[in-house]
Image 1 (cartoon, rainbow, N blue to C red):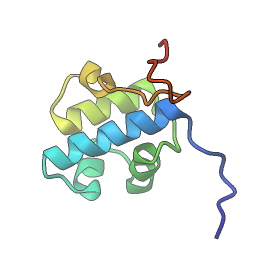
Image 2 (cartoon, rainbow, N blue to C red; image 1 turned 90 degrees about the vertical axis):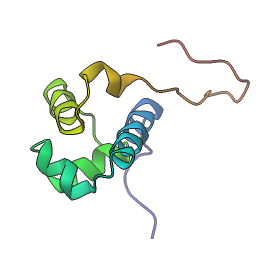
Image 3 (tube, rainbow, N blue to C red; image 1 turned 180 degrees about the horizontal axis):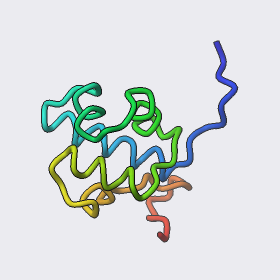
Image 4 (tube, rainbow, N blue to C red; image 1 turned 60 degrees about the vertical axis):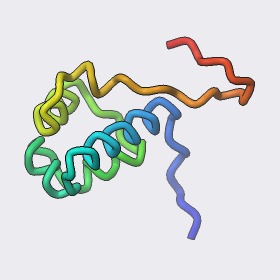
Length: 90
């Protein structure tokens, strides 16, 4: 069934993948991180899938839930948009 949702922004998608990687590295389930970060389960799913823009307070809550500094949640690589290997400017 096709989705009516627009495709995720590549930056939101990369952020979400990073959150998922960090969560899995710590052996946490979605439910556990949602509880630790005081976020809804569904909201966390949307963030991990790049479908929700996490505000600053949410970034702080996720960092607390993962036991990290907020800046560590933003340490990830974006896929080159053009396929030419160039890294996009941030």
